[in-house]
Length: 212
Image (cartoon, helix red, strand yellow):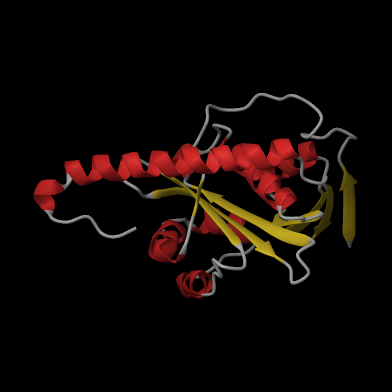
């Protein structure tokens, strides 16, 4: 049986809400594939269910990362000072470009700080700016934090068994949303370079820093 729940007629695009301190969300590319896999393999069983809606094995995660298309889709990450991925976002675009699916995983130690909301908002802005009109989110039914985020955004949610599917209509992009993403991209690139330089200095005696 499928149940439906429609959030109240509120939208993050028309109301103010508390936002955590700025976090650099960086676009990822082919050279970050190994780090994406490392991040996902570090997730425990419960976290894998929250991310994928089912218990994904190590082999399934390797297949998933191997099939990431960095040219077609958008993949974002939040790096700590050691350049390890603290969070990973995958925005998979459908062939017509009018819809996309959002998925996110956050290191357990960083949850409860508003990072999931920030990453969701970042993905929404990126999708809007590329002409996406509908965002889909597939998740576990008991993923209460993400269900709360998509409800507050105004998504319609359908439940079936242990899984949930949220559907969020997106407004068109604006000059403001385009500029906001551009400035955020530039700032996150600068943050990454500074972290990389600091790590290089910290590890100078231990050998060369791996490419990334």
